[in-house]
Amino acid sequence: MSKQFTAHMGIFLVLSFLVTPSTAAAEGKKSRIQKIEANGGFMAWHAEKARGTKVKWGVVDALLPASAETTIKLFRDYDNYKKFLKFFTTTKVLSREDSKAIVRLKATIAGGSVKLKATATMTEEPKANGDTHFKLRYRKGNVKRLDGDWVVTPIDDKSCLVKMRLLVDPDLWLVSNDKLSDYNLVNSRRTFRSIKKILDRK
Image 1 (cartoon, rainbow, N blue to C red):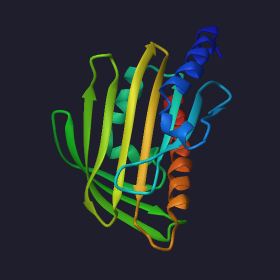
Image 2 (spheres, helix red, strand yellow):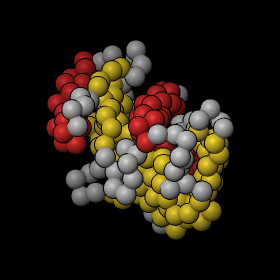
Image 3 (cartoon, rainbow, N blue to C red):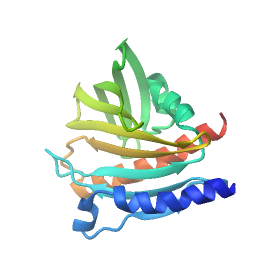
C-alpha cells in the first residue's frame, strides 16, 4: 500500500464520520470501518432511515484505490450492474438518452426463494463540486422500493471516495422490516467488495 494511499486513509476516517448522516448517531448505531482487501480499500457502513417505508437504507462510504474516471466508467455500464450487485440476475438497458436510461431489473433474495422484477430509471448527475452522482429509482414492478445511489468523489489519479445507498423493500409480510434492513446493509458491503475486485482487474 503506497504512502499516498495510507494518507488518504486518514482523510477517509475523518470524512466517514463527518459525511455519515446524523441518523446513525440518533439511532445509537456507530458506523463500522474495515479493510475491503489486504491490498488497499476501506469502507464504513451504517443503516439510514428511508421515507415511505420502515425498511432502512444500507449505506456504505468507501475509499477505493482506483481513479474516479475508472470508477465512473464502471457505474455507467448499467447492463453489467449484475456483476457487482450479486443478487441481481438481470440488468438490461431498455432505452438511453443523454444521462438518463430506463433499465429492466431482475433479482433474487431470501436464498433465491423470492424473485423480484422491476423497471427503474438510472441517471448520472455531475455536481459542481466535482462529484458524480448515479441514481437508481424504482418505476414499477412487484416490489415496493428498489432504489440506489452511488456518489463518486475524486481524490487523485489513483483513488476516490464512493458513497453508496441501497434500498430493497419487497413488502413481504413473512420477513420483518429489521431483517430486510439488515439485508440491505449486508448487500451494500458485498457490493463494494465486488466493485473492488472488478476495479483491481482494470
